[in-house]
Image (cartoon, rainbow, N blue to C red; front, side, top):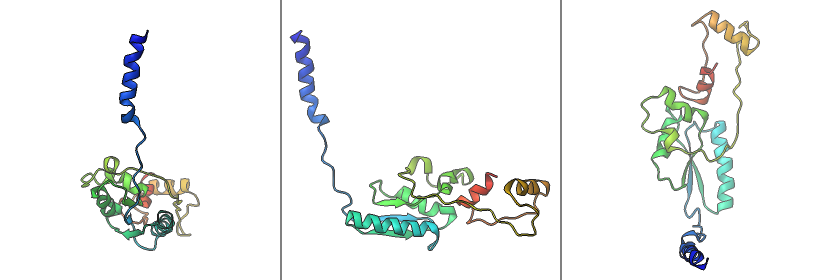
Length: 171
């Protein structure tokens, strides 16, 4: 019995160092950037600045919010995808960023592989409004109208690949 126990005990003792708790490295030790791939002044920008201020106070390090809008958020998202994966460059992304590969087949990065969601900071509803002269008073009627008169209705969004554009495509 001891013959079987001794090798197991020896293996456990020798492997203990490999499983010993590692000492956590301090984070952050330098400024953190939150890249907002949206225009300044919008809800995403405001949210990033509120969160950045809170994190900066909590971490004792500056958190800088940097807007890099354009191409449905892909300019900012690609910038983050190309940054070192050390946690010092964060992206305030939207649904549009992760759905972008469906409408931008030649992206210079792969959102699913190169960007990892960390948390949901907020949810903002999309609202559809119509001119009072449009004879539709709910989404079902609006869709029926659009299908019955192809090309006669138009809509506005924040741009190709944006969350508002992607939401309109799902109707």
